[in-house]
Amino acid sequence: MAIHRYARREHLGLTPAEFRTLARLDSPRKIQDFLSFEVRQNFEPDGDTVLSVREVLAQRRAHCIEGAMVAACALWIHGEPPLLAHMGAVNDYDHVIALYRRGRCWGAISKTNAPPLRYRDPVYRSLRELMMSYFHEYSNRRREKTLRNYSVAFDLRRMDPALWVTNEKSCWEVDDALGEIRHYDLVTLRQVKLLRTRDRVEHEVDLMRQWRRPRGLKKRR
Image (cartoon, rainbow, N blue to C red; front, side):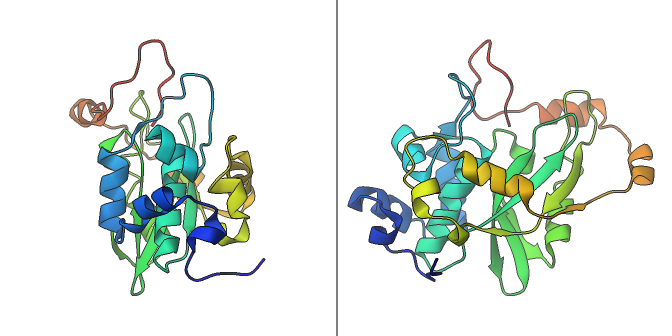
């Protein structure tokens, strides 16, 4: 499959209106603001989903991987590679972010209902350094620090846009691909034994959420 530097509307399969929405998001800051304030949290009331870019724009809801694909698509339209990274956790939900670079430094765009796991400025000299910026705040309801590994950058240009941009069904192919690529550990087993749990004040701050979850639904980031 040919690798295009700029994603054209016809190549992506988007309508003019869909393309205009993404084209106006011409910086990582604008993309993050769009995901944070114009796209509600997807609490998956009817079961697990991996909504495509088109479905997120139509439904105006997303969780992490869905928001990351929207961010990646917007970056691609403006000539930046559409990169995702997977973050693996124990006793907790995994997370997916979109990556971008400024010079030699990495930053991240992140759709999440938990504020500490959001946007990262492009000041991190390596992917590991970027991922470690999430480590302290990445915790579960038992106050345990749960982030354990991260993936290499995954370029969505390796996949047909029909699978993740305009797919009207859930895009499980992307989820599967992220699970299969190489991951690196962030901490050793010895270091895990030394981890301190988040204290009560930190935990109370962690419980802050932007979007209210409907009663009776499982908790999602």
